[in-house]
Length: 241
Image (tube, rainbow, N blue to C red; front, side, top):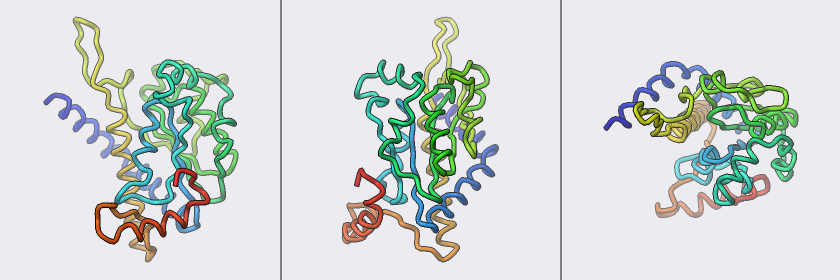
């Protein structure tokens, strides 16, 4: 299948070029958790799926705070979501109920990295003291004009960048006679990257003698009590629990 082939090639590109960046991110996350921080995740439109994938996940970290700003999610209106992502000045409202404390890490995901909402969220999170990590395609950004009022891109404002290497337009395949680009990859690549970061973070914590706060599958006998303790530990910082 052509899609599998193209995804495999893109995953190889990310693996070959982003290992150091992924390792740095994992080290930052491990330090965050050792110091009682939490991990915030924000994205607009389909990018919000990255936060949903990490949250309350069997085999994943418990202290994940996905920021679900519903007006930027597709179920409140797909066109409206796109319009608002391009609107400047939403960051304060998006982060109104998000408390950022020392040692917190803040992921911002955006395929193109050109729209004001994710860029300004990154700027504000950084201003409030979080270590910011951007998941974005610099190739995509360099090919498109920024919509930020100061001409900034996501990769320019965050503390650390992990390049997704997503092509301009997101689709991995084209049908040239009909001028169709299709087979988007940003969600698959983004979830693979954050999955790798979380996996490496857990490994680092364990290697250094810390018990990683990892959820067990609710379909395992005895898991409910384990998971309940983790929820109570982080409930005051993660409203979705």
